[in-house]
Amino acid sequence: MKKTKVEDVVTMLAEPIADSLGLELVDIEYLKEGGSWFLRVYIDKPEGITHDDCQALSQRLSELLDEKDPVPNSYILEVSSPGIERPLKKPGDFERFKGYKIRASTFSPVEGQKEFVGDLEGLVDDKVVLNVKGREYALPLESVAKVRLEADF
Image 1 (cartoon, rainbow, N blue to C red):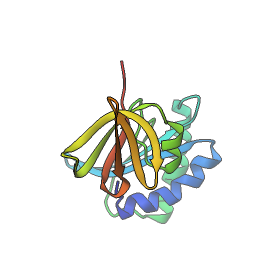
Image 2 (cartoon, helix red, strand yellow; image 1 turned 90 degrees about the vertical axis):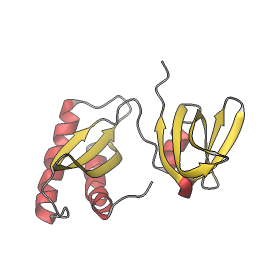
Image 3 (cartoon, one colour; image 1 turned 45 degrees about the vertical axis):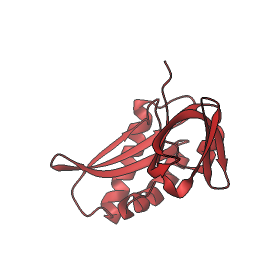
Image 4 (spheres, rainbow, N blue to C red; image 1 turned 60 degrees about the horizontal axis):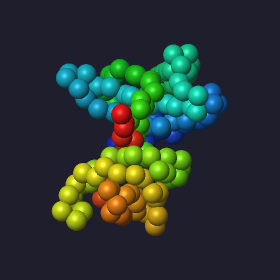
């Protein structure tokens, strides 16, 4: 779950703005798709995100990004909800979503596999602990590439 320098700097700039608006900063992605660079900011709040929330954060963050200029390329700023399959990144996420179904992927195989889908038991001793069909796995945090909530229809 490694971030680029741009993502780290933008996180430091965006977090106080999100807090002041009563929003949770969930994730930031800086990536190239096609020929364009995108800076994606994902926000959430307990009652869900509105268009006005996205617009308020986008406007204030855009002004600060123009002033500080931490992004080396021209980019498209997008602010949105993380969706139903939101990423789990912060220690508090693993507590908040205990008991939820998650999908975790690792950089290298753990017990012969790199993809795990099961019920989140939490973050214990820097390990993502999940139950997959009655079997418990403890994935070392440094080997985890991504953890997302898994939509269960």
